[in-house]
Length: 354
Ligand SMILES: *Cc1c(COP(=O)(O)O)cnc(C)c1O
Image (cartoon, rainbow, N blue to C red; front, side, top):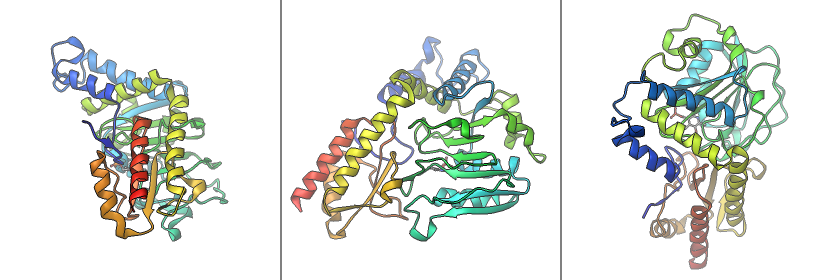
């Protein structure tokens, strides 16, 4: 029996995607070749790439004339430096909300001045800073909309007088936002899009004109755009599985439908964590993530009992990140509410037992 997989990433995909992707490894779309062996320049794969890029923009409700999407490699971590290489001419501002944004700042410092707009570091990133203003003299401002490790999420996107960039690795396609507010969005696929290996980058085309220095081809957004996201061999299988998963989401009713399911799943879980003093939610209540629910045991002496119950109930991937400890339930789009109910049921059994 398949486990209930709460892993933070690489993470769960829908069973439809697994089925179709498995089929394609033996025979891709009935062409008697595997997806693993076809040319990325074949009309079949060019079709896959174009479709994946198109659906991504469509789901985000972004206009194809105004925005473009790319599937690149190197993970979100390469985007940390690539955005700065292309766009950090003088200074850029970052809201520091966790380990990933700290890493993004570290990489950007190779290219220019990095201003910390606000930070929640003094409380081990358990909240999202508010009440700050972003000045208009920066090349861009950068936020991390969902902090995968700490389980916090921006529920309001700050107003920015300069171009707004965002790492949305762990919450893209999970909720409706006005994506037009952003000039650049990036997300490693392996949290809420597809398998590891591809990174989605969504760019407002007009900012390509502000690439501020000579950038080598592989790291140059303009070149990837000019080459239709096929400057070199893309991660063919990963892009294919991303396409399947985006199509699955579209068929399900898109972001609106999945957002209400995500809200329901996270509300159920937070309610269970809050309803007595066995567990303690890590994140500030107002800033809680819909995607990564972080919680700790009040009394660590019961940890072994709970861990054993998780195994007995077929629950996998619930360990918290080492910088937070405790537990983290990642409940991305593809997770069915029934798995969340099983987790809640297990938590109840544990509470009754101790
Ligand atoms: C996982 C994650 C990353 C790192 O992604 P890679 O693709 O492994 O480089 C960056 N930012 C956030 C918010 C993440 O959750």
